[in-house]
Image 1: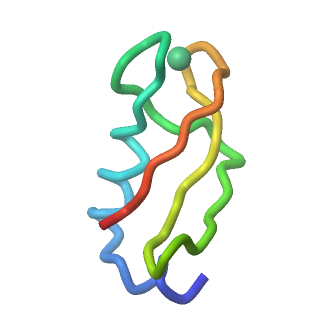
Image 2: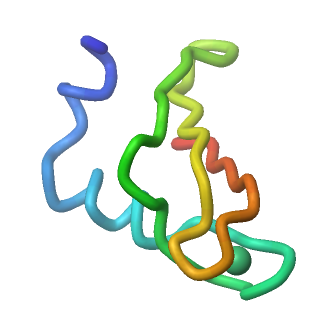
Length: 60
Ligand SMILES: [Zn+2]
């Protein structure tokens, strides 16, 4: 994922650590998340590391 690699690593870690879960509030992505392009931005989809619910985050 070229766009994702363009993002500095500390920003990527910040994004992965600021997912929003409906059960837990702010949480982290569990390993195995996926990246998708969405309207020119990177959409991270994965599971909450706390409860396993689906979470997603759009990177600006
Ligand atoms: Zn959760």
